[in-house]
Structures are given as structure tokens and as C-alpha cells.
Length: 222
Image (cartoon, rainbow, N blue to C red):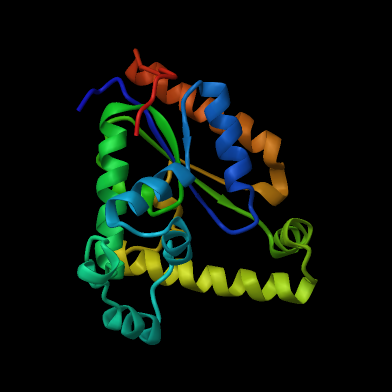
């Protein structure tokens, strides 16, 4: 692995500003911000629709979802398509892991979610960031973003928190909200999103100075 490559991972609670902060941090560093690009790459590898991969990310399938997938079969004679059976949660996670690790070997990038904090824990130049927020601000953010009521937003938060916690524990065997796994933890309700970008940049630049020189090239291929 090229030791000059920097991998920044951002783990975040829903409504805490993960995408906003990740995009702006990547822009300041001059490196790619990777979120949907990973989803698209995984979907291509597994011959799945992007929507199907998106609906399964960072959550475990229910019994009936698994049962329905096990009954699905594409007849290549009738459809002309490549026959396949929908991947299990573990198979999907493995493809995401392999994709993230392969990218991180070749390119500096900011990765959002998908257990990146654990997947890239052995990367020599890994900066792991955790973003949390108070429920009041999270509800306000989701109401504005999705045009839903406070009650609907709070229900969505509780569901997402539970699913993300179960998913992380299943595949990492760790509590993803444990501060010991991160270089920087921030409550964006307290410091604000723009200040969070500032602190994240300072954290990354400090790491760069300690392991300099780092290749923060804008050239990127996935």
C-alpha cells in the first residue's frame, strides 16, 4: 500500500450533518468525497439496481426480505439476463468492504459511513471521525429535508439508530459509538456544522504533518 495515501472516514448519526461535513472537508483537502459512488460500484458488481443496494445499506434484512430473495430466480433463457441470486447481507457487506479497501489503496478520499471506521482501521494513514447530534436538532433537520412531522422524524431517527447499531455490531462486533475507535468525535449540535468542518480539517492536517508527505491528489478512479 502507498503510505502517502490518506483515508478519512466519517461515521455519523442520521441528521448530524455527515454528508454536508464530508463534502466540504473533501473539497478543502482536494480529494474525492465518496458516498453514492461506492453504492453505484457495488451495484454494478452484483448486477443489482442502485435502489436495491441503497435500501439495504447499513441495515440487516428482515426474515421476510431474506425469504423473498431466496425465492427469486432469473431464467436466462427467457430473459437473456445473467442468472443470479440476490446476495445475503454478509455477501453485500464483503463486496462493500473490498470496494472501500481497494479504493483506499490507490486514492486519498473521504468515505461516508458503511463501517469505514472499522474496515480501514489498519490503513496506515487513516483518520476516523464520528459525528453525533442532539435529537432536537436531528428532528429539525429531517423535518426540513423530508418535509415530515416531528413525530415522523423522531420515529425515523429511532429506527435508523437501531438498525445502524445492529448492523455495526453484527459485522464489526463493536459499539460504533465508542469514542475509543475514533481520532475525532464531535457533537454538531454544540459546535455547528461549519465549525465541525474546520476541526476535521485541522485533525487531518495534523496527521498529514506527522506522516508527511501525503498525496492529496484530485485524480481519482473507481
